[in-house]
Image (cartoon, rainbow over all chains, first blue to last red; front, top):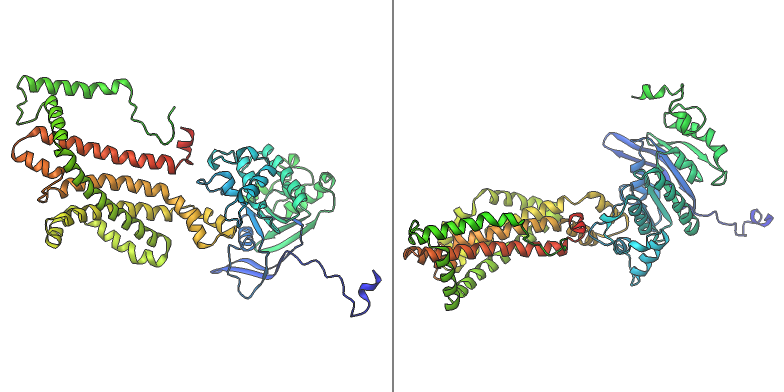
Length: 266
Length: 260
């Protein structure tokens, strides 16, 4: 290892190029500054959670990363070409059968086989030929995940993908997302306002407020062994979201004598 | 259970009763001379005339002429409506160019154009077909145009986020999304086509259902008039059936049909 820093002729190991790289990125709609000189790096295979209140600029940032908002001439914006989004609503095309939705726009001849494999991986092997409107909410989100995965994205964007699901289904979806991430290792950015979801899933949690990243917390603890971390971290993160909360879990948060912020916020 | 794509006219048994009763009353009134044949022919006489007219070839040949007029007029009107709606629906400049004209056109009742069409095209086939085409254009245009504009923009975003180009977004998202609206428009157009056929055939027709009706009127043959009314009704039902079959196949993904 001593070699690497020595002679200028020797090749130093290139730092792994970030999958996403924004520098001083701003987005202005009329008078409103939605994103304010934002810096963001996401490393390959990294799982990042983005927290933010509504109106914090989450959606705009996500649209930029999804390539849906191309008005950033002259700004330093690097996003991978292989990227995929899972939206809060599954956004399956109701007039295409599930496997055709998964294979939507894929080039090549073995589309059906690839779509099938992806659907089996998310546990929907039995609904290949179903119409999307006959799927349950959880199934529809699985299909949306399959549609994202089949593209082998370097960057997987999850836009509050589980917000509309019931708690048990959401738990299963968290398991699924983690296992898929561990197998395929895309960089993941999950946008959420569920602090617990962020802590459970991510390597790193960012808090966006008024178009700026106001907090960044790296979670070193292994997934599945984060209970100790949670007590302090969730209070910190909630604090950044404007919620003054005591340390502890959700159970003690709601009726806590100090939770006067609710009245203040209304 | 109803099979999707096979619309049925199933009625509860009781619902046949009143029309049947009316027919019986009508027949009885005709037999007893309460309704003279010059006012309205008896149902039995109508059936007899119908059989004769089919046998002699009079009805089939004239029906074919009328059918041809509807088919050509509808073909022109629906195609034009679709093309204009696509141009207006899929591009902003197309919308600016076409939509105001269509809204002006909507304000003019097509029937009122008949005199102008006769001046322009004479009294042959052309004004009849032109009337049908002109009248059937609008429902298709309006519904398809609104259908395209009404496609969920979130689905368009989804398509774009997965790297679909403009043509693919149109093919996979916009057009299938607007199809239900197009079929609604088509259903209106078919109904209007039959109405316009009746009106257009009042213009000095020398063949067709309207010709039969006009002739029958001159000879006070109410039986022939009723036969032609029945044929018009059947044409309308047939047109509706066609659209329902198309809907059943093309819109199999819709929940109402999925569950049926």
